[in-house]
Image 1 (cartoon, rainbow over the protein chains, first blue to last red):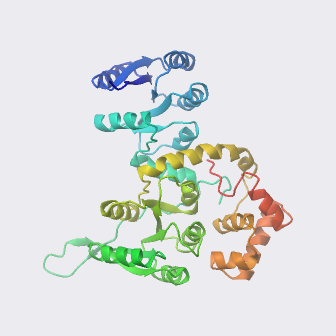
Image 2: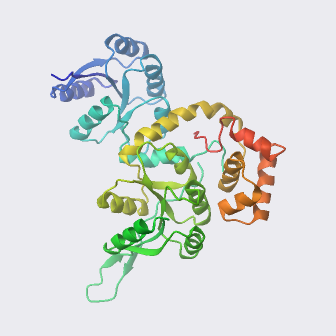
Image 3: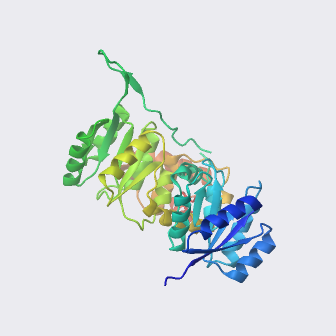
Amino acid sequence: MRKRISVVLIDDNPSMRAGVVASIRAHRTFEVRSAPPQTAAALRKVRKTKPDLVLLSLRREGDHGLSLARALHAQISASRVILVGLEPVHKDVMSFVRAGVSGFIMAQASLLTFLSTIGSVARGIKVLPPELTHSLFAQLYGPAIRN
Amino acid sequence: MPARKPSKTRKAVTRPGPASAPVASPISLILIDDNRLLREGLTAMIHTQPGFKVLVASADVDEALQRAREAKPDVILLDFGLEDHDSLGLTATVHDEVPGARIIIMGLLPAQEDVATYVRAGASGFIMKDASFQDFFATIRAVAGGAEVLPQALTNSLFTQIVANVVGRKQARLLEGVRLTNRERQVIDLLGEGLSNKELATRLHIAVHTVKSHVHNVLEKLALRSRLEVAAFTHSGRGARTPES
């Protein structure tokens, strides 16, 4: 039997967290746990469980998500990080790619897209939804040397 | 944020007749590809589709560029692997000189090391070597409509390049505030390859005296004394196109 894909969900919205965990658990391909959004506790949980994937779903404004993504990539690089719940215009998409994030899931994604993205990233495929291509290209085009 | 080409909305024209509902004007295309069989095949294929108009399909870059300047096509399809021309340099040239045209690079393989550089040169979309007809036309329509298109197969390459370029950020920060044009950045890259002014002129399809003027400006802006210093500078890991937000 194929090994199940282990997932840790870090989400700062408890009701959303319960919903996402239930959706993933309905599929036998995955085993999922949740972790609190605070950096130290989240890192502790991921370090302890060493999942294949970390789903990062933070609605709180600020750089917390970015710094957590960086810390996860630096400290537990075997666990691939997916950022969940994005809007089409995202000012930090390139920063998240630089921070080592392997995939993105839009806020409006269907369950099918959600599951297909986490399956792809678990196999080592990077995933950028088409809705984010404009943001990434625009940020990539923004040169260090200003025009 | 520099001026990336604005998204275009398809123009609507009204044709005379009893049922004169507005019809979108065809997407005008220029195709640059030095593989004759492929070029003619693609042109024939495009002709079978409504809503597209091929203005020129040519292997002659100078001719195609001239036509592009005059006709201002919606989209320029450019082959990634031109034998006698640098497709990257040509992308930047087209982006500079035909600002209304959106550029699609064709014929890419999944492990492409310079997707990020092409985006920085002004490409808006990519078509893989093994793309289906459906992918081909969907990409042209999307890019002509103002979207950017990155095939899934290139995402790993692009992410890897973005992460790798983090290394160059420190040096890039030193250059914040230095204002260089796209053309000057092209000149810096080509000086890094050790090209002479004449070779630069040929590669960029501009006059030698124009090249000299660009080199002069680059030296002045970067506070460097010679083209050798510029070459050393480009090899120092910064690269003129290091991505940085």
